[in-house]
Image (cartoon, rainbow, N blue to C red):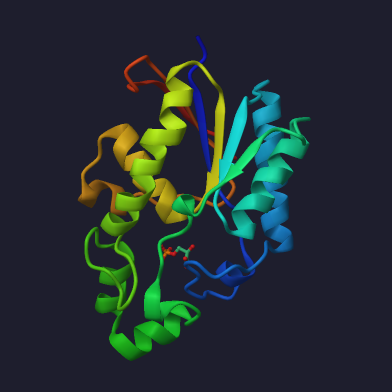
Length: 206
Ligand SMILES: O=C(O)[C@H](O)COP(=O)(O)O
């Protein structure tokens, strides 16, 4: 039985390019982001992978990445479920600010703590722990059961919503997961056993 779960972070967005905190804002993909999503589809196609269902967030950069991948593997019409449970971590008051300007205002260390500590939220926003507390119940109720019964599932989402999933799948601590950087448009292919344990993991980097 093929318990296939593929996670992919959206391609570069307009705000990634401008170095802005993005969170729940909804900028589109850049040309490079489109190219990254296209390359992700090509890599999945080269492995002969196809899916029974796709999940993405309520944000267009992830939705477009998902659709570009599905187009690339010849599954343009695959059922795709969009849910804001898979959205990026809400960056609160940092949303829309330039990351360098934020460092100048609050100091390098404080901004690093907001970006890469597990449980310190930025002002008015979510920590990675808070993000995991909304992503994981959805994953465990809606996505994982489908994988465990043998469906092949694609999830196109965001750096921090995917970190939450990876933390759970790989049994990582908060400290371990915040050190994990996810490249845009690089699929991570998991094959699971009946209990959700990892049988095989492949990162489709260049
Ligand atoms: O929301 C954002 O700005 C990024 O997608 C992720 O930000 P981070 O790299 O600071 O976690």
